Image (cartoon, rainbow, N blue to C red; front, side, top):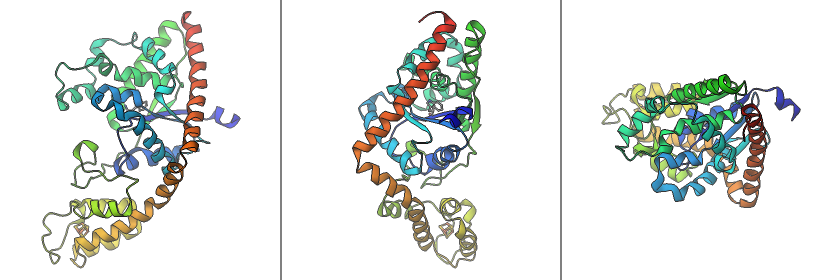
Length: 331
Ligand code: TRP
Ligand code: SF4
């Protein structure tokens, strides 16, 4: 425990909107896993954040938070090494959210590119809630309440991190130094393809879950996007434009070269190629599925892990808020 004190603090979060897929895994989870030894990591299920855009699915949030925990534990996030917790279990986030909401202008939030995109994509018009506009403020509270030094995020989250830094600066300037200005740790973003060849994303319906069973994996891989010019097995293929080939690079790296040459020389058909890949994927995720199932079959143990993580997070957040109260002279 004393060792963790000298390590830099990291916080990151994911919104629980359903089981995690290969894109979440390659874009974040796998990286989080690696960070656990080097940093004092905090990983948060951002359940309140789901309310900003998916109020219609609010009833599923509790269930999805547990599913997210199972995916995390399966993937190797270790409750002994890292603080794994659920946002809504730590009310200090809400208090700091309120305070930080005074440190930022409405105009600045309205100019947030993520916000503008969501309004356009979700066709929300003037149905936007106060809380949705304030999404980055809550995110800043998530980060600052643990005095995080670094935040592993995808590139899309950089504007939010910049806003976090601005709020921290303003607070520190007005009241006194409390918060470090957190740095982004940008996850090397490989655009990971879904079953249709477009970027894997839940909203496109092209995902494959990391917890998928061997049968489900095969079922999803079979109709996946390949080189569209390859109509017959005798047509030479171009692996560089094929989603299946990108999956090989990730999940069966020792077969990449052979696959590329057999594809180009038309000595391997797409159906065989996919079944071979499925074998690799099934093997890659077998330990994850086994670990996940262990916790799934032992809900009491899962409850205890979640409760212990939330307790640790609460203790740390409460310490920061004490400092905030003292520095502000109120609360
Ligand atoms: N906004 C992040 C996302 O959609 C989730 C999130 C919430 C988060 N709070 C955070 C990420 C704090 C990093 C730090 O992916
Ligand atoms: Fe893709 Fe394999 Fe078919 Fe080549 S043989 S196009 S790599 S699925």
